[in-house]
Every structure is written in structure tokens, then in C-alpha cells.
Amino acid sequence: MKTKKTATTLLLMISIFGFSQQKSKIQPKSFSTKDKIITVYTSADSTNLRLSKTDNLTFSDLKQPVETQVCIF
Image (cartoon, rainbow, N blue to C red):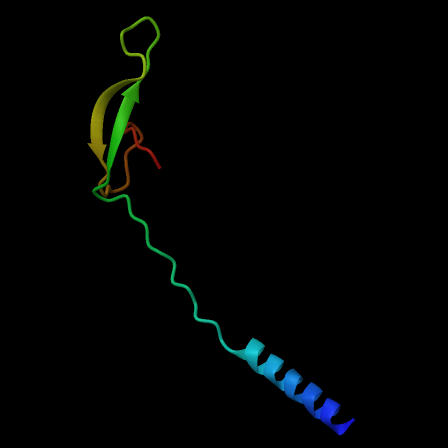
């Protein structure tokens, strides 16, 4: 009986110790679009532009755009 109680206590202590260990925090990977290149495709009805590659653009930092400036957020 004493051996069973000791084994149970030991198992309980090991379980508590195992669950109480602090987990290392995973650092999120940073993502940036700066200097990444995108390919632009155009599709227009009644033209030769049917999913046609029309440009390559590069993302860059930009200050606050004005209302007339076209931007993608």
C-alpha cells in the first residue's frame, strides 16, 4: 500500500513538474513587402488583353497618399 502511494505521489510530482515548465515563446516571423516584385496582368473585353502580362512593379515605402493617388493597402 505504501509503495502504491509513493508511486502515485511521484507520478503526480513528475506530471506537475512537466506541465509547469515554461514554454519558449515562438517569435513571429516578420513580413515585409519592401522591394518585392509583383506581376500585373490585365484583362479587358473586346481587346487583345485577355489575362495578358502588362507590367512588373516593385513595392516601396510611401508617405500618406493624397486622395487622387491610386494605392493598394
